[in-house]
Length: 183
Image 1 (spheres, rainbow, N blue to C red):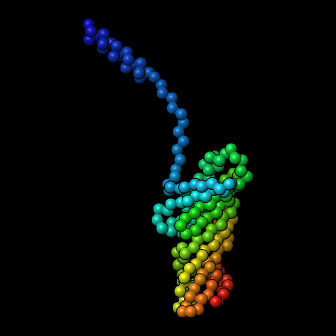
Image 2 (cartoon, rainbow, N blue to C red):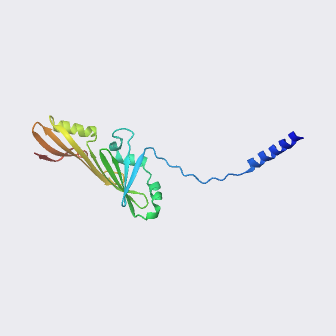
């Protein structure tokens, strides 16, 4: 009799436990492939991006930004501030990309500046062909454009050959020298 009583009690408790409904709140899932540290200075936001490999960000900063930054999520996080536009700066060890977005999250313009990053093959060939014997001591790449297209870009080179020094500006699109200054 005891066994029957405990069996019925166990059966009743199991059926009551399975009949309970558990309601969970909606979970928000985001995608962040790379670790980014965000700092805020007034109304400007800076992302310190850790690259998966050296030069990943400098190779194509706009594509890197589009792959690793969700502007809609960013706008949602800053919803109560009523911004008309957003300026977000992405920084790496050798340069930065400044991106301006409108209030809807559309990319308006970009500006990029990188120091001593790897120059594209066509630029290296142009330097070698026009400046044989010269050594590039340092260079800066500057580019700007509207939306995700680059309108203007220039390489500013500091070169040396023995005791001679000169500064050269190269436009990779025009495949030629923009200006030259000697010291």
